[in-house]
Image (cartoon, rainbow, N blue to C red):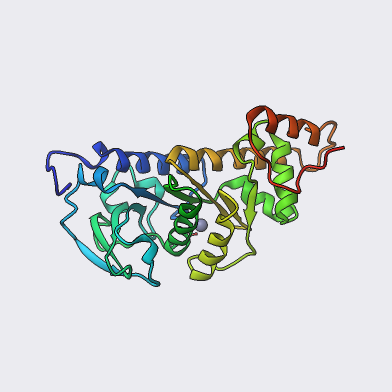
Amino acid sequence: MIPAKKNVKALDVPFIREVAEITQHMWKNGWDERNGGNVSYLLEEAEVAQYLDIHHVERTLKLAFPVPELIGKYFIVTGSGKYFKNVMADPEGNLGVIRVDPSGEHLEVIWGLAHHAVPTSELPTHFMSHIERLKIDPNHRVVMHNHATHVLAMTFIHDLDELKLTKILWQMCTECIVVFPDGVGIIPWTVPGTTEIGRLTAAKMKDFHAVIWPQHGIFGTGTSIDEAFGLIETVEKAAQIFMLTAGHEIKRVITDQQLSDLAQAFGVTPLAGVLHLQ
Ligand code: 2HA
Ligand code: ZN
């Protein structure tokens, strides 16, 4: 039930529908088996207040670490242990709208997370990443994680060096360099759900919109759900082409000069140190 307007259904609320739809897309892509994946989406107070009663706090949850940078901010998040497969059928049970309280030490549940659900186990990574991305881009809004199949596969057979990984991904599809000119960050294998993996990931978010977790998956960020999803889709497509061509005789490549021409034509600045021009 939506507290503010009782005749409004959850999926009529634009930001709830957007997250429900994107989780469904990711699940259909095979990137979110079981409870894999999580999303958090920073919302404006005015857009929340249009649909939900922001003065109604269902529950308060203690945060594992304080986030003074996010005091008063609203997010829609996926729930811990929830299956993306089920979000469309039961948004209220699988998603939640939360606000960071004035102390920065608690979350206030405004809507959803029914039956005592709690936000995603990767909340440390999400919150720390939001904090870093907001420093760089005030329009930043979305952090999205999934187990993109070919990205994961590629981390078993390719060097985990950011410059090398970025270059091979750019070389796999002509438009990759335009979509992620800042390249992809990568952290060492780390236990998920910890503040440690949150810190490592967020440190990479200072330089990258996308961060790969070896043998696990990918984090994508952006100013909208479409942008974060589109970034992950593009990295995943490149990884898929890599996996399809790996072990085959390579007859031609996109050259460094061609990559540079693309960057120039589309007005983007490629990550330094990747291209070696004559
Ligand atoms: O939410 O994907 O990394 C389940 C996960 C943890
Ligand atoms: Zn995961």
